[in-house]
Image (cartoon, rainbow, N blue to C red; front, side, top):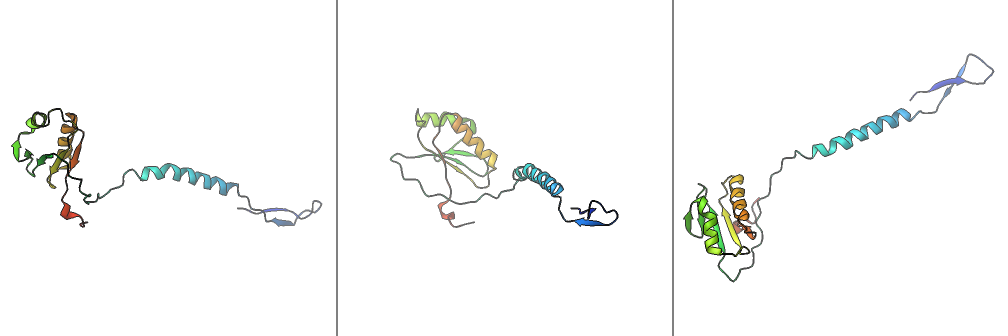
Length: 147
């Protein structure tokens, strides 16, 4: 943003008058560089955001006409189908024996809140890998207003 001096009249030498025109080219160049920098860095800043997931319960599902199948995982990692304790390697054969070819039968997965997220997902993928697609997670309905 400089002001240049130019001659007041073309025939006179010596005194120069001030030229009040602003050169905006450097300003535009700086603004374009800043725009490019922000366009590149803004998406990178949103990928590493820490999130605290909410702990809310959903509305209850309507009751079905048949007894739902329930798989429970306790805090110590033991598995149950309904009220019967089973070994982890027996989970899929027992589900197949109970449900037969009923891959559309709803299976309720009840997992203790202290269980590691990866362990719970491991049981879910094991059940889904066996062909059961109608899987639901059970939450505590009394916890509706917490957090």
